[in-house]
Image (cartoon, rainbow, N blue to C red):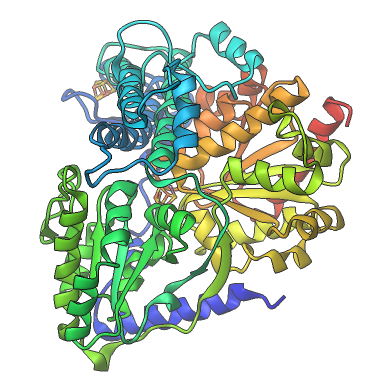
Length: 630
Ligand code: XCC
Ligand code: SF4
């Protein structure tokens, strides 16, 4: 296979040059202008939790100012800041989950919100002990909405967990006192305990961070995935294309960017409305080309094969092509810079959520009670903008790559089942996967997640690490912006098996799958958890015993901090390629990188060299295999 990494870079360079010619700036320019980042901020020792401060204490023990005005040490300040990152990340994923529960509440047979996956509905209903026998599916759906909404703020007890959560893991959490109670409650606890004069113990704060983050992974995010599948169907493998070359010269190009699939699903459906297509043709366009970006891109590609325009650092480049009629967004990971940037082109930057209004954007609220009609009105703005495109200043890069996406846990299990063992006990569904891992055909699995970050070369560490691991017979599951990186590099193609080791190659050939399986958006890391949990249950071990690792090579968001935390808390080691702002605390650093293993059987690794990180991941997989004698 040709090395697509260089081609991707060439396409990106072209657009960066164009940006310069056009006199517009991108995140990379602003990163350069930022010069050296603040050392206190980088080490996490800056506190502005009260107005006696801001206080910055020395990141080096025994040197300089050691306490804030209230007496908080570097350990306390770093732990508080870390906890607040976990709270913000968990809040974002979980509020996305809540929006979908509220959306499901409005589902009705003859309305604009419908149930597309009755099987998933039944399985989620079972989780919440909701009767399904002989009942109308919409009544069941409304009960599921009520039950899941209750998980956010119930006053007593603990979250209701998926049966995929191994008993042993639950015992670990109970013993440490980190079993999530209610999603919102555990987030609020952090905001309370990090207020001036509350928790002054770093371990206590880290435990709270873990509890809220686990409430994200096994609660808010898990619910987001479950409800999305019920409403929009559980993904199954579908072909798509990735990179900015998916934009079309003679179509109305729409970039859908953000996270919640309620908006994006409606836009995708409404873009096929004959009325809108006729309107597009009347403007001189061939049609309407909807493309997805970041996590929204993952959501709509895995359910409809909608083309993937790119990941986080490509959002500005999409506008720079000069070929985008509208960037339509909802929440999260939307650069406010798009407002100014889009004004240098004809692009309409349309914000739709009261949670993420952006100054100088065109705000058209997405009306969830009439999603189809509302989506049509939004798309109309884009279509009518086609005539304003400046054809002399358009540059659509040639680069695009085919990909196979949409491997939900259900799809993986079904696929394996069909090939390996056609008539197995439904409770033994992960058996084929367990068998290929036990036999050593696959050495293990790695989950890649997360963002882009201009601190590292775009997509490069992600792709490098992936290639190393598949060459060593480690199967990869991928979500979020890392999934776009894999797609652009051609790694989501069945042909990429040529880059895999002999064992993984055999499995790929047998199943017709790529060595890297696309599992969706970042809330869909719940699918990773589900798969790992089912595997552990099947083998009668804890998740921390499995030869499974995780990595976020280019992470940047607070959501990624929450993810890393719940991944480790679930028993899976997590490699970070960007140093988190905790180095100013000896206690927190030592806990995350070492001691955590005693508590959770897993820990964080921070390694900025992708080659070394990949080697460490593989070593760790082999060590875990030894531990359970396989
Ligand atoms: Fe955002 Fe989800 Fe990160 Fe991409 S991967 S930059 S969080 S879009 Ni979630
Ligand atoms: Fe300073 Fe303490 Fe106030 Fe933070 S909480 S700003 S360390 S006085």
